[in-house]
Image (cartoon, rainbow, N blue to C red; front, side):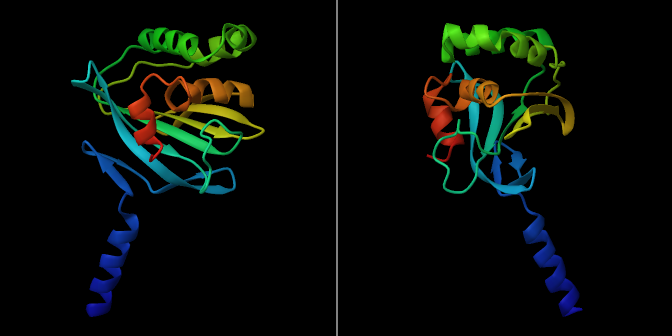
Length: 180
């Protein structure tokens, strides 16, 4: 009986999520291709500093300091409100315009358009995850179901840069989700 109880406790500890923020749990690592990538940090994005929009987490290789480098990585957003696909497209366009150069936007335009076409309506409690695999591209998944992959390290740098780059939409959020 003692062995069974010890095994049950051990199993519960190993299955526990690495982080919980605002009631949202994230795993301590993700398998990205052949790599086991650890959780780097979590944060909650607030609109007008009052209304929670999403809880997010970032996974980066151990020791990686540049979140936009050509390495396996993931960024997940758990939404606290329903959001229409059209609103995601608008927000992506506006955020890319603010965080990327006009020349980069022109070069990425066909891939941005393909990415924007992947968006679906989100209901409260659903998640989007961006996962980048070097040499493969950036996958957008909704609640674990892949919606499509956009090729290119330059595209990954631009799309992850919205939240994690030097011109991120919120520096404090960026620093927290990167564990700084």
